[in-house]
Amino acid sequence: MQQRAVVILLLAALSSCVNGDCGCNKLDRDASSSKGNIQTETEQQQVCQQQARNQNKHYRDYYAELEPEIEGMSLIPGGSLHVGTNEPHFEADNESPERLVKLQDFYIDKYEVSNAQFAKFVKETNYTTEAEVFGDSFLFKTLLTPQQQAELEDYRVVNALWWYKVSGVNWHTPHGIDSNLNGLEQHPVVHVSWRDAVAYCKWMGKRLPSEAEWEVACRGGKQRKLFPWGNKLMPKEKHWLNIWQGEFPDGNTVDDGHEFTCAVNEFRQNNYDLYNMVGNVWEWTSDLWRSDDKSDAPNRVKKGGSYLCHKSYCFRYRCAARSQNTEDSSAGNLGFRCAKNA
Ligand SMILES: *[C@@H]1O[C@H](CO)[C@@H](O)[C@H](O)[C@H]1NC(C)=O
Ligand SMILES: [Ca+2]
Ligand SMILES: [Ca+2]
Image 1: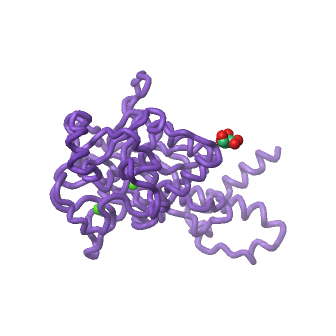
Image 2: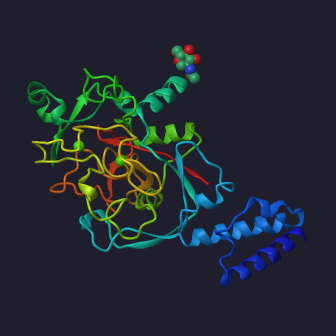
């Protein structure tokens, strides 16, 4: 009986919205003080919220009281949203075609997970990462001395000879076995596998974003743009992300100020208040690369590109771009951020 009343109220509110502005722009706390109106008011707010959602607006400004604020996370409005592109740069990556996905509202971390945050997790759980179990991880060549490079020549990645598999490297030693985390507390944790990322997010009461969620968050409410902020790489002649400048893989000119990772809060990139979505480090998502992959360590989708990406070689610091790694692998340019249901 009560349910039916609510439905009728909703319908009434909905029909009153069709022609008017739904009162969505004139919320006034004083107006709701007359008791009889309160339920109607709430229903109306929900209808307005739904409308804003359908229009894919960032409606937090209007209805913050209906969705709780979560520290360090942004609320991303769901709806029917475009992902992918019909102008792919890497056909083999399946960036195309553009397609519509239906998403619920969700939260996503504003920042990549930092070393300080991951350290807290490890301290409280005694978690051991896969790189520590396997005893190695992948390091970019400029982090090795010429002598180390010569010794490890046979441990390079075929087709990507600048990656070396190095014993003793893990998240504690991001720049090589003699390195440590001093000064890198606010940089993204790296050398973490997909499984490590899943474990961290779970401990936080969160989860990894799906690829569609990640991409919708990346797009910041804009349609068909390359980057979270638009189509120009450097609007206002400023650097908007941490990638590679100069010749790859030799001769990084470091114009953006960062040869390797930067702090997770360095580059704010879109209207959803998200940082380093593209560039800095690649980010794991929950999706399988191929949905029929039944292997023990299937490939998972990663997004956003990293500080090693250069247009000539890896133009993957775009929202639609995607790549993959097996879920047990780790590297010095691969991290993650978490998401949560709204
Ligand atoms: C972590 O390891 C330490 C030392 O072995 C132990 O005292 C502590 O109880 C462990 N904590 C958890 C959460 O397992
Ligand atoms: Ca850089
Ligand atoms: Ca990133």
